[in-house]
Amino acid sequence: MRVTEYLESAGRDNWARLYASVNRGWTMTCNIAECINRHLLAARELPIYDFLEEVEPSTEFVYTVHDGGRRFILNLNNKTCSCHMFQLDEILCLHAWAVIKKKNLVADDYCSDLFKPETVLKTYDVPVDPLPDEREWNIPKFILEDVVLPPRYKRPPGRPKKRRDKPSSELLAGKNRHACSTCGQLGHNKCSCSFEPRRK
Image (cartoon, rainbow, N blue to C red; front, side, top):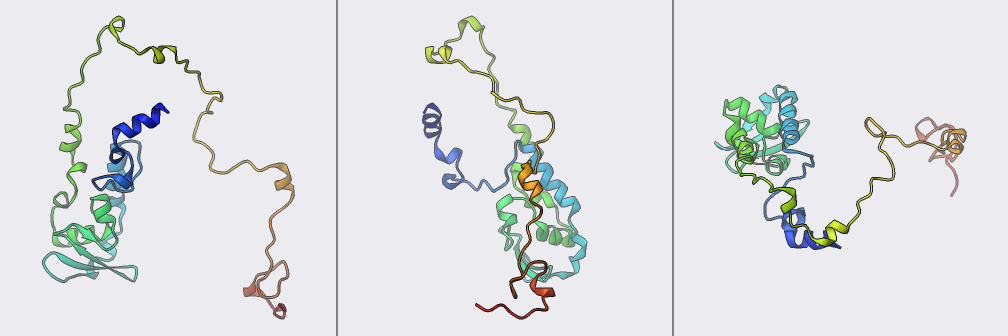
């Protein structure tokens, strides 16, 4: 109940994408460093030079980039791309990188200020007030009386398993055998079927 009241008082626009007044993107990370590193690493590993010749300028700012048989429209002036990654992440997408490299432009000019080192350093400009002596703390009574117990189960070391543990009954049953969609018999599929079609 207290958590609900706290979240409501903080304002839904601060913790829910649906009510956010700014574009928060869809990148879920535990810190800003992981977010920046993921984008920078992806930018280094992109096969940009594979389709650099397939960049067609329409105007000074609008370009058509061919990628895997598809065409993407890029507008450098508005910082948008029809793949929607440029405007969602506010950092260069694959197609924007292709145009930036071809035109020899500075990539930093087309990325959000949120990803620049100066902005990250500004987050530490806020002064942190030191805590007074513990004897001077004014702690509400309901917090002092609240008993916080340790977790019931200890988390094992290492990363959690991605595959679930199967019960012995499932292991002994063997693999599922699918029936052919043409004749309805087991042991083959419709590509290798040589029987007559099943009657409905």
